[in-house]
Image (cartoon, rainbow, N blue to C red; front, side, top):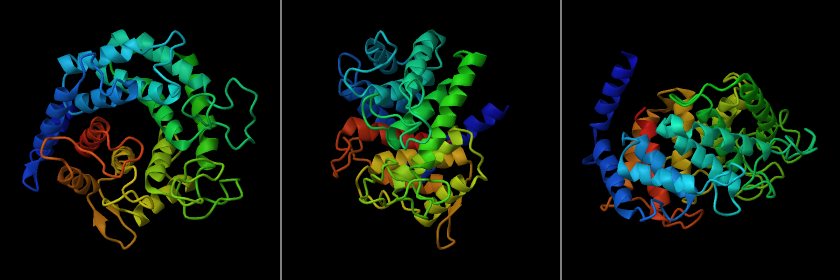
Length: 354
């Protein structure tokens, strides 16, 4: 009964007009565009992570896992599986593997269980402090980078954390054994060290650069894509989301501080402190984090209340091109690539509709 009510509410929400276009119309146009641009080998841009994001964006917006476009996309992902369990075609193994795990989990197809399980174990092995001799006092402890040899960062860690959380008990997949649950919990505990060291929060961040605004930066060595050690939007939503996936209580001071930063910097026109750079990544992470928090509304720094899902969906739909795709003119992190930006746009709308 709850599932039926949820589906009916979703249908109702999708039918609400937004600036002359309903969310369903926007989603349908985006999916139609994606299907038309899919390559003969089933990929999008011949890249596993982008293909996985496109696959997830279709499934999460109601496309069947048996749809030919989804099936072809999954087949391409499976062709990228390596003997060690990773899913990649280049050196960015951790990034690609994390995103592909989530796409395979979204299919809810039991035949992918072994592939997911092996990929998850490979991913956990790459975490700093797991199989190496790095101690928890090291600033990079608990982190994950683009691959095991690259500097860990919050962006890659958040993908890995979500991949582990989303695939551990996916419907129709498998019931994780006690040993798997144990290693997952250990991975999350290590990750909390890294997350805390990316947050501008003195008292819980032991790095000298730590500020007091509660927001997040890219790396615990003091690297912020917004320059200096300035907290910025996409990483703060990533940090908040990751704390929750790592089972940190919502009353924990680190979660409260991150949420306060988000309230004080509520913005749908730009990625706070980054402008248009990474805008669709920001929207995507924004939607996931607030959906996970469970609050239907949020008050900004002035006390104004926002129905964030409605406002975010309206904003994203307003940016859709007439042909059905999305793209970011601020060409950074591949967001000028229509396939990637469109996947982000569709995923954002899917979380707004939940």
